[in-house]
Length: 104
Image (cartoon, rainbow, N blue to C red):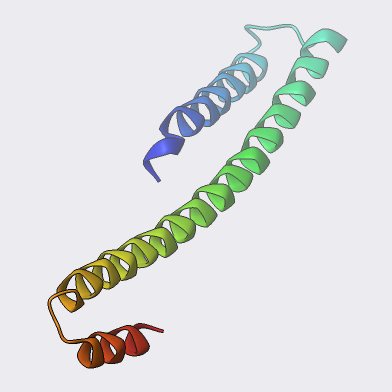
């Protein structure tokens, strides 16, 4: 879904930073301290949170899309009904009643 591009970018950025931290730790460029361990844990928590939130947003967007489709259906029905009523104004009373009965 197009609305999730910034969200996906943050997930990818966070995953890249986590990989960088792991590479630096394994190559001994970075001394592993309690602070770096906590940072890694916090990065994991953030990744899970982002993923969870993305799922939530996707669900909301799906619901919104269904709602929009329902509104489109209602609008089409309303426009058709309005047209039928306008046309019925030019008909005899009997025919107009029949058109309105068919609408109901």
